[in-house]
Image 1: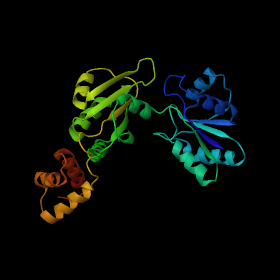
Image 2: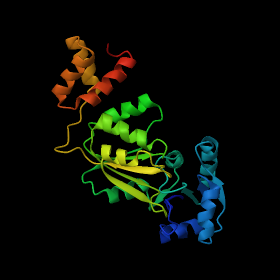
Image 3: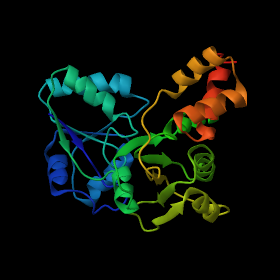
Image 4: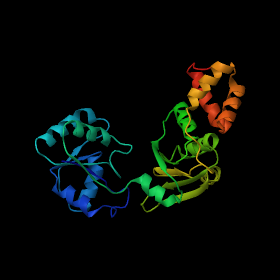
Length: 276
């Protein structure tokens, strides 16, 4: 059996009785960082053997772990914090296990995105994004697509990029409500909630430490219908011969969308040579 075990995201008390039992009983624990996980095990008096499984060794370590499972061992997969499979390589091992006919069982528990969502007070369905791309063009392209997302959005961000990300969200997605929380469940946990521009202004000049979780509220009013923005842009560019501001204004009006995300999508297509 491969157990997917959620571990605390900060406070070591946030672990289930079942998770502790499984970590004690399995033959091996595959950990993203064995030193980090050893602290958790030591705190609870667990002496199970550890082996590393992370982004840099998953291609070789994954098949090794599958072989151990097929030989009859029980293995628990843990990440540094939270639920494996969210913004870490855990999903790759789980996929290998399914392909190999190995049983997979979840031992649920903490997840930073879910914890932040519960604090936000934002209603509606939700979509999980995780960490945004580092490259500015890719990041703005994704935010442009999210501008028409009718659901609340969960994003993870590093402290050094937090302010830039908030400013880009305001520019591309509008001044919707946001919850920003850092150091979830830890001693110095802090949270800020309000319009994106106001939260960005409040955080400007502050030294933010610790990874952050952001929750963006649903857009105000009725959810916008899902549209193929890039496809519509290319189609109208061919049909009308327009480009730049004129094409952006035309498509924004037809789709009843803010002009900014349409223009961002246009710039991406232009850079790829798909429109003039």
